[in-house]
Image (tube, rainbow, N blue to C red; front, side, top):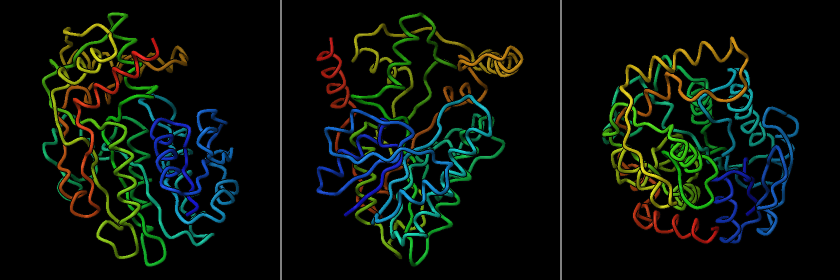
Length: 332
């Protein structure tokens, strides 16, 4: 099959492209830039912006399915920049699917669409955890709008599904682990609220596998069509335990220092006020949204994903940590 992956140059996007190629599919990636890491895979790269409607629709020509993985992520930035990438970009992907009669769309969403301040989620599913309200971050706001649009587009001609992987990590990660390492080495990493809140995470191979499983099962009228699913390893651990395990795996110093939630939240509010006033371009160390995320329990039930499209995590956290350690050792 001919498959388009948006954001194939990113961490999850690369894993999707690699896995689809290995399965015998012809893969094209729609990216803002050109990525050398995709060249050995034989992925055809199409350069363009998600917000460019004509370019996005043209990229969908001749495709049998789309994995819409690209998005603007993070906890800081203008609402407009997030809206253009996440909302307008998704609308353009849907338009491309319609224009070219594409029958399957697998959308990479996020658990952040259900974020509600410090409200914990324990064993939640998409049926039991409602969408969040009053988001303090444009990422969560725009991803919620986009996910709803994707699910609403599901019909007899275009089958859609939304997957919400939680904190993806593993070899090749250029975001989560490197940031943890940098802050830990600089002595600037703290556990907000003590670090005893339980969280779910997702090893990269499992995150990609969930997308492949959903792709195989997805069709008009399928059990997963028009629905959203949380995706993780299904092994919740405290944030203290998980973060220190990641740091140990890559030879970085472990962390024990904490920051009370109230203090972290206040710092986040101050940063959100000062950064625009001082016209600072870098991302602030804390925001109110981050303080809430870092201190709150979030773990999910994989039963719906297993039931509807057969997703079962294949790589345990402990095995993933071994692979992460091996990849870092090979680089040193």
